[in-house]
Image 1 (tube, rainbow, N blue to C red):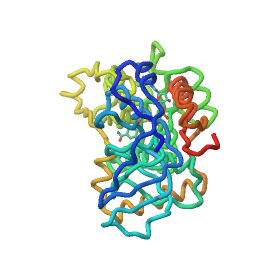
Image 2 (cartoon, rainbow, N blue to C red):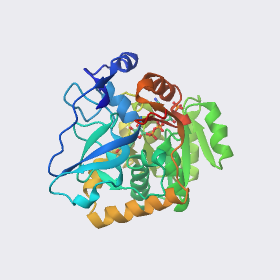
Image 3 (cartoon, protein in one colour):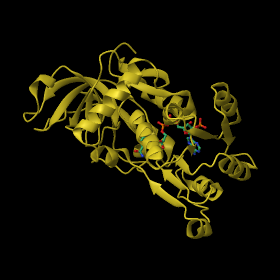
Amino acid sequence: MKALVIESYQSNLIRAMQGIRLAETTMPEVGENEILVKVEMAPVNPSDIAFLRGGYQIKKSLPAVPGFEGTGLIERVGKNLQQNLAGKRVSFFAQGDSGSWAEYAVIGLSDFIEVNEKIPPEQAACLFVNPFTAYALVNHIIENGHTALIQSAAMGQIGQFIRFFAKLNNLKVINLVRKETHIDLLRNEGAQYVLNINHPNFADDLKHVACETRTTAALDAVGGELTGKILNSMPDGSEVILYGGLSGLSVGQIDPLEVIFKNKVLRGFNLGDWLNNLSTKEFSEISSEIQQLFVQQNLATRIQQVFSLENFYTGLRSYISDMSNGKILFSMSQKY
Ligand SMILES: NC(=O)c1ccc[n+]([C@@H]2O[C@H](COP(=O)([O-])OP(=O)(O)OC[C@H]3O[C@@H](n4cnc5c(N)ncnc54)[C@H](OP(=O)(O)O)[C@@H]3O)[C@@H](O)[C@H]2O)c1
């Protein structure tokens, strides 16, 4: 099969991208509890970029096929699974050695969902990771009695999904971006609170708004010093949930007095662990709820462009130079 392959992890982003090659590789073997998917489309997410750079939690044996998410039709079914799954369209989360930037991927039993036929492949390709993550994060906010939240990387895809679920549940959102142009874009979409993390008064402004809106929860995808600035600016008893490390830096600037005397907490979130704690029934109900939102087009991932595997380098460049503009997808069809 055709696949994008890396021989090594490269911390330098440009070297990491240059290290990818399009190759003919052997088809992955299907285990008893796995399915073989003929991949149609696969997105590029921040976790893929971190993976290429050797900075992600999941490491695969090298040479490896990158790509953690995608959609396609089930080509073959492992012998312990229901054989009538063959031919169904699925959205999947490739957590094993197999990757989605390939014509075929092998996926574990609990790492795929059957996709509603009304959802187009471009949307199905990005259905598993971000929508479920935003759903889970907003659920955490509601279950813990918060009425407002701060979110960083607010122009990203999870950012827009978080705004959607927050609005549905009457939660106020303080959006943090790093470009002045994104402030206007979000305000034009109706966002009430938008702050630029690079503004010299950012910390004071955030403290003021967080106090005024009594915001006791933050969802941070950036890490580095921003996490500390957010935590220090929030009211007593607040919690910051770190779910991404976009800055590539260790969390810093947390004032110990804020943690010791103001009862503030920093915790993490990982989709895989959250999914593992759901019963089959809960997962299926949430999956139907999310898919209905896509069918009714209340939710949609913003897509910049679709690229063939041959044009992977142009695609990756396009994504990393403007992540807020939407995902790029790799298509395995000859159409692109
Ligand atoms: N924990 C989990 O289970 C889980 C699951 C899914 C995703 N995630 C994480 O969620 C985060 C967001 O993913 P996504 O798919 O929504 O991303 P995305 O759509 O690709 O957008 C990324 C956003 O982050 C901003 N950004 C990038 N680097 C930044 C930095 N150093 N400082 C501030 N802002 C920065 C970009 O803004 P610019 O336009 O300014 O570059 C863009 O708006 C990622 O870290 C991802 O790994 C975590």
